[in-house]
Image (cartoon, rainbow, N blue to C red; front, side, top):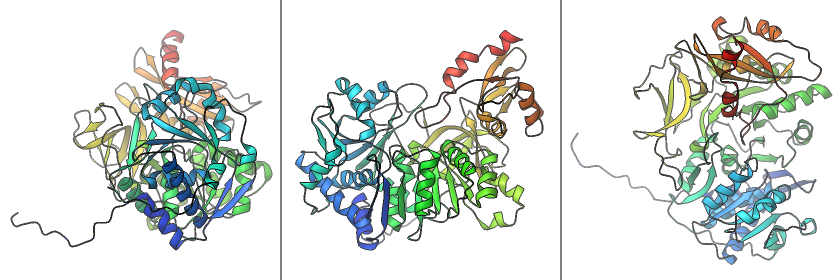
Length: 546
């Protein structure tokens, strides 16, 4: 190829988060934002109100002598005040560090110190968490409690101030600065099963591009006519980027705050009539059980997006057949901002029988534009997209990490691709299915068994609450599946009952070698099953009982 590159004559305007809230205020000023507050009541205001208060947040940061790039942390539920921080902190030029309160105390201390957070904005619920670790996070200069003045708690936190009192003293006039769109906007730490959490630093550019890509029909399908309830937390991966998407589209947001149980969620759904729900399977199981107990139907809900872990087939059927709601699998990671693939409804599904459609819905979906993916073997050779071949899933794109914050570990990066740590298949239509985490897949006699598929098949039994499958050492086959299960109260289900239930749902050689009933199962801070300790505890179980 010869010749000189001809450069387009287009304006170079930076993609900044402040531009999102400015657009929202000008284009969707009357869009409603509804929040359940920690104070116990329901709060309502508009996008215009949120934009005004975001500017007050920026003025507050200026008065606190926050410099561009400084980390400002939040420890808060999904709510309007947290929404204001999303735009006020990042728009000012500081970095919003959203902290997952479900992390262990030692992990909280590590990430606060590692991020070098200067101030922490905290919901009432989490004040005791910070009080317990205050002596170990002495770099934090102050704590700002997200509450009304008359609800300000008596606290041992040093330099604790009331958010509403501070905001009332600030002007709502602020000129958003312009800077390089590659500047850091927010950060979130992974909740890995081993080692310290790793920091993922999002840029303004990556965040805005991700938000633009997420609103289309092939993704979350948000529009000015939408009303959505994000149960997926704002303290982890930016609630899948939906606060930014809402600013673009003017979609109504219904924030659940601390009310994450089935009854509280139903109360908001009944009152606000959202057409889209977003969350993890454990939350939707609580909602479905509550709906059954009160004999109600999700009349307004059209789509339920499930991420975090795969939804069992029984859940896909339940939403469709009992509530006429379409379950959409989505997959992504903290390192991916997080959206990677979405299994949205399309014309092809209309040509399938209901059973065939259910099988397709069980996949994690196709990549949204901007995400490239492939599967490779241990030699990093690309594997075929035949829907059968398993391989390590690699991804790349403009909102995908290229390194961890203050961390030289490059083991997850392969020739410009990010190794997700997942084992997956990709079919000829680009539908991706997560088979397992690379460390969780069970290798039995040289063949792979998906612990995820086995768990989802088992949890479909009406007397089981939750299931976990791990590999245990075996004298002949190296490894065989072991099923740990939690029974419903009063259930007398036996191991043989479970095996008979599974007999026509999975390949015969996938059947667990044993079923152990337990009272509880450990989870990570993001709700995923935590298998590392279980594998150690039960690794010799089959050898010892043989």
